[in-house]
Image 1 (cartoon, one colour):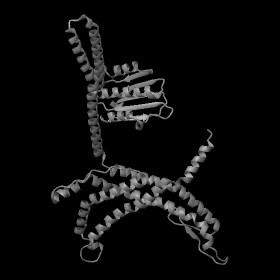
Image 2 (spheres, helix red, strand yellow):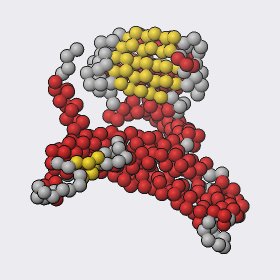
Image 3 (tube, helix red, strand yellow):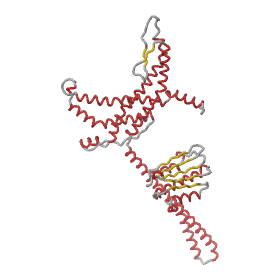
Image 4 (cartoon, helix red, strand yellow):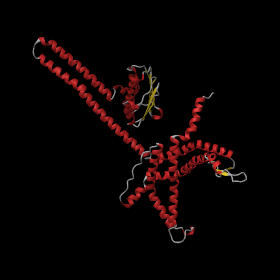
Length: 452
């Protein structure tokens, strides 16, 4: 298979320019700042234990180690470790957000107990603090690898300088013999030596190779550190789950309040006003009928006709409101409800359903309204020729997929329709995924749990 030369050139150019990118500089600065702290913490803890062990009388010899001092030092570390680890974890979260753009949510605040024993018990039960301690311990090998990655940058820059200073410092008479000059590489623990200027060109090439490799070694170390930060310095899976549920509950409450306000407004401005006009027209007709005049018959007929039309309009609006709360067609199942939506669409719609067991009413209602909203959006904006609606139950969840062959470009940030659907789906811990590249097609997948 032939290779596209422009794409190869772009790839090689990107590799050559990677050491000079902003991301490479930010990751290098992160390692320079964060790697020493990762090594200093365990070294400091060990030094503290050694000091506590030799606090007793006599010279600092192994036979004079105070086990009571070691026990006291271990107890102090046990009590202070979660608190200190929390502060260091906060420093690493801020540093990661500033340099790497990785923003990790704060863990729950520490809640001290009452009294000395209560505070001590709270410290020992501080889950977020102990996760931060685990981060600091697991970060030791990552910090060592970080220093190794920084060495790639250092040796590369130093080796690049050899051809430039060789002529200044190695300009000596032919009868004078100088020792070879060592140079280092990250792959060897002992230095190589060069004695001639052509050898500096090889060192220069090695330095260039080291700089080309350095960003990728740095990135691998940074990715490992970011994974540890996300999993150990955040609020934890259970706490994050609680926060997500609190947000979805708040969204559900807001949606319910908005629905009630919309119903009240629709009833007041629509059906209520029409029924009031109906009552007035019927009252006028009653007054006309009481005059015993046949010449008023035409006017009475007009009033009755207006009242009749107002009653029909009010009934239609009330029917639409009732359908907005719970469509009656859902009483026979989601498949029939979606088929009814497809029949009323201005664009041909193909509906396929694979639902072995019927979902709960709440899940059915959400799926129906999501399908109705997506269908309306496709008819209004997509300029599509066909629309497909597919419903299935993979792994016990209800999966709704709406696809059209239109112009694409659907973006939740540019309107309230899709963002409102995302909020509605989120109230039951569901998920909505949108794939709508410019030019189409548009595919919206909504995954709902089996129970609300």
